[in-house]
Amino acid sequence: MKEGNGIWKGIDGDSYIGEWKNSKAHGYGVHTWKNGDRYEGEWDTCLKHGSGTDIFANGDIYVGQYYKGKPEGEGCYKWKNGSVYNGLFKNGMKHGKGIWKKGGSNVKSNSYEGEYFMDNKHGYGEF
Image (cartoon, rainbow, N blue to C red; front, side):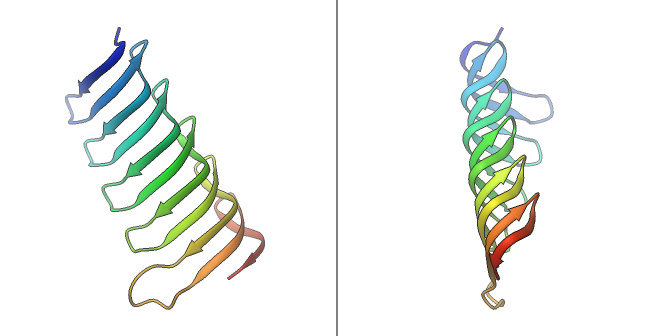
C-alpha cells in the first residue's frame, strides 16, 4: 500500500509526485499525463478536489476549485488565444456569475459579465 509521500511513474509516461493514502493520490500532489497535461493541487481518493491548477498541453490553464475531479466553485480559465473567464463553475462548466473577456491582439475588446447556466450565457448579463 502506498502511504505518505512518494513518486509513481507509469509505463506510458504518466507520473505523480505527492501524498498517498491507501494507495490513492490523497493530499497535495502533481500529476503529469503522457500528453503533457499537468495538474498541481489537492487530491481526494485520486480525484482533483480542493484548490489546484491545470496546465494543458494545448496552452489553456485553469486555476481554481475542484470537486470530485471537476472544476466547481470559484475559478479562472485562460485559453491559449488570450480569452479569460473568471467566475463560478459547477460540474466542470461555467455556471453562476462570471466575467468572460475575448483575447487576442487583433480583436476588439468583447466581454460578457453576467449569469451562466450549464456553460451557456443565461439570465441577466451585459455583453
